[in-house]
Image (cartoon, rainbow, N blue to C red; front, top):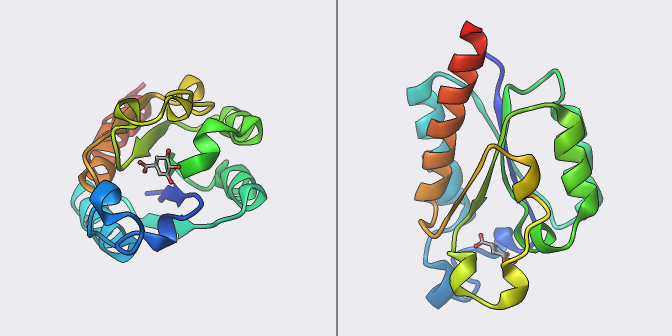
Length: 149
Ligand code: DHK
């Protein structure tokens, strides 16, 4: 089985330290662990990455084409700004799920706009690291369905 790329954007390396009243106590290593456990259960390897650099995220999405079976992406702040990430997801031709730890719709209005939402299968937000597990479950259904067709 091809891996699922789980891609994380800027400042997510600071989870656990960063505004814990908003983002919680979970670290990115904790999130990686739950993703790997979910991947093992669902039957696909997880390639889990984080970067603070927009272009690196774009290159990783490009590199997923033909290599990964799908993408789970938390582009963090780039969600609200990046046409480049929007274009890269579209060009990848891969099923993708957008994830946010927090419910961005309960937060500042600038977080209500996403350049990612229009090019993914669906969006999960507000459930902390568990949202990544939900995204992987949704993705596995899509991948299984597509492989049957
Ligand atoms: C993470 C960020 O860093 C913010 O810039 C987004 C997202 C929300 C999250 O909830 O995971 O606005």
